[in-house]
Image 1 (tube, rainbow, N blue to C red):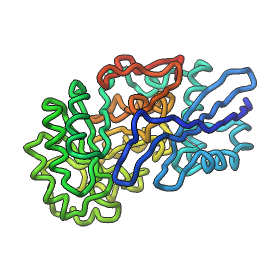
Image 2 (cartoon, one colour):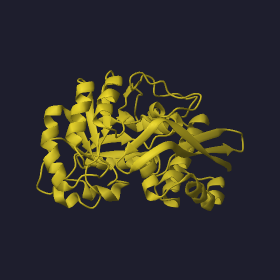
Image 3 (cartoon, rainbow, N blue to C red):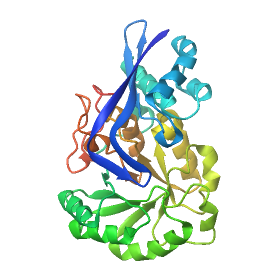
Image 4 (cartoon, one colour):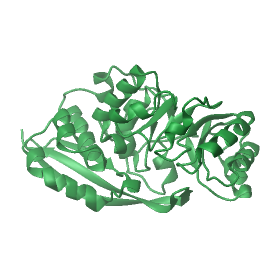
Length: 328
C-alpha cells in the first residue's frame, strides 16, 4: 500500500541554557514526519539528528526527499536500513513506520519485541555551570534517583563534590563529552569513586580509546560518541563496559535493537540516551529502555514545551511509558 510523506521542522526551546563541553544550546531543532497510507492510517516520528556531525532539520529533510519515491511506493523498516545511513532521517522514518504498523493492527512495539512496558527511571541532566550553581541545581533535583552531570576538564572532581553536597543520595552519571585526555581520566576516576559515581560516559575523545588498553577503570565506562552501529563495537570491547545507544545515532529503533543484541552478545551493558526532543522522540527509545541498565530520556524534562500527549515525569520516573495515543 502506498504512503504519503509529510514533514516539517520543529524547534523546542529548553527551560534553561544547556551547556556541555562542546557548547551551549537554547533550543532543540527536530523534524516531525508523518506517513499516511492510502486508507488514511497515519504513523508519526520525530528526530533530532546528530548535531556534532552537522545534521540539521534542513539536511534531514533533504535526505528524506532523496528517497521519497521509494518510501512512498511502500518500504519496510528492514529495507529502510539499506536505503539510508544511520542518522536523524532514518530515525524519523523508522519511528513513523513502527507507529504506522501499530495503528494498522500489526502489533504493539513492546509485545513484538518480547517486552512488557514497566516504569522507566530516567536520568536528569545538569549542564555545566560554576561550582555554587552545581550545588544549587543538585539540591533542586535531589529527589531524582539518577542525575547526569555534564563536566569539562577543569576541576570535574570539584564539580561532582558540589553536586554530591546538593544531592547526597542520587546515583550519578558523569558525562565529559570527550573533554578529558586518557591521562586525565586515569587521574580523575579514582578521585570520583568516593563520591559514588555510578558511570563515566564518553570521557575521552573518539580515537583515543587505544589508550585504555591494559587499564581497568574503577568506575564503569560507557561509550557514546564512539558508537553509532555494530561496526563500532570492536573499538569498545575490552575498553568500555557499556554503550549508550541513541536512536538518532543508530538510525531508528529497528537498527538500535540490532545493535543492542550485538552489544549484549559481546558482554557489553546497555544505556539508552537522547539528543533532547519531545516525547515523540522518546517514545521508540522507551521500548529499548526496558532492556537498559541506564536510561537518559530526559528531553521533555529539559524542554520548556512538549507535544500535547507527552509523557508525565515524576522525579524522572515515567510510570506508564507506553502511550498508544502518542506513538505505537
